[in-house]
Image 1 (tube, rainbow, N blue to C red):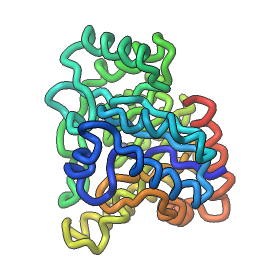
Image 2 (cartoon, helix red, strand yellow):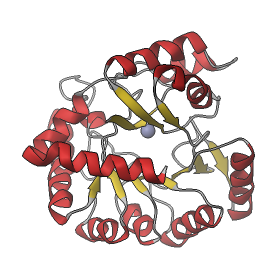
Image 3 (cartoon, rainbow, N blue to C red):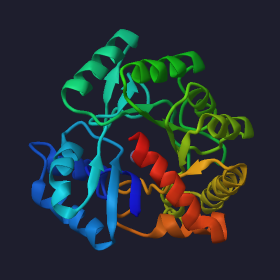
Image 4 (cartoon, rainbow, N blue to C red):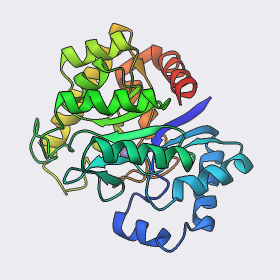
Length: 281
Ligand SMILES: [Zn+2]
């Protein structure tokens, strides 16, 4: 089975503002159908959306069966006010408001919950994230509350935030730049699936937008961790983050990059990880 375990129907890989604008009045069903066709042509039968607050993933879920695709969406990702993610998600100020958001997501049919708990990589400075992550205590609380409500949890987590999320039993870690060995160990112990979205880094090479040596170093460190995590027996699943800048929908690049890390075991490892995602989400 071919899957993309992290993509964004609302985005187009070119310009996020214009992409969102396309759907602002209402989801552009013609455009969504075009993207679903492209996935079908690639033989993809499972898509897990990273979310948006304009109902684009929700519309895609409604149309996907016509394309033979199982489609899962968290509806809007949830991020803490003042932190990364508000361009695409819904914000919460405190735990009470987070609980209210979960209740709304339940009523509106979210398949799972996506939480944003860290910043992004600064692609000009290897090792640097754009902001401090949420506190470990807060991360654990977010995961526990969503689990109590019966949702699986996908976490956008770079750097040290991943360890707290994994210890709390988060179901998948997305991106996961600069994971420490402790974080990888916690993920392995808790059966967390790592979706490393290497495409979002690899596709920046040669674009001239960022420092090439830093982009190369970021990619190399992520690929080393993927190989290490696989050697530890951790779950890994393919997700492109399609729609992010320079990451087209329905591309094969993520498989190529993961293949470079995993070698002969690539398809066996990815099948196991993908099945875990499908079972949980
Ligand atoms: Zn994403």
